[in-house]
Image (cartoon, rainbow, N blue to C red; front, side):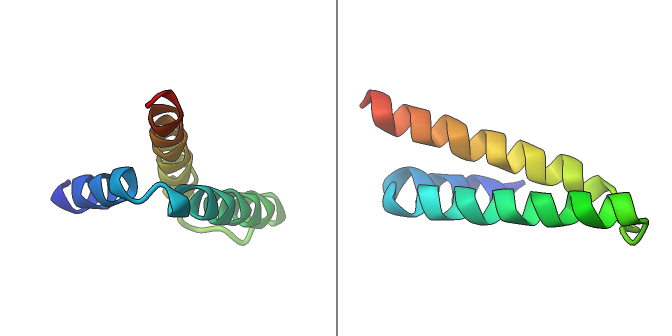
Length: 67
């Protein structure tokens, strides 16, 4: 968990990379969903983790906007 909190604190300090990371995660989520629908995805838990990460990034983006 310490790894995630340091990652998030770095993103809070550097708001320019939030949008880039968000786009990359959305593309990765689309790829995972495609793999799931074709039956090639074995680690389905990654979809849930990625969705949560996207929500965290959106929260940071909103915090930066309100500052």
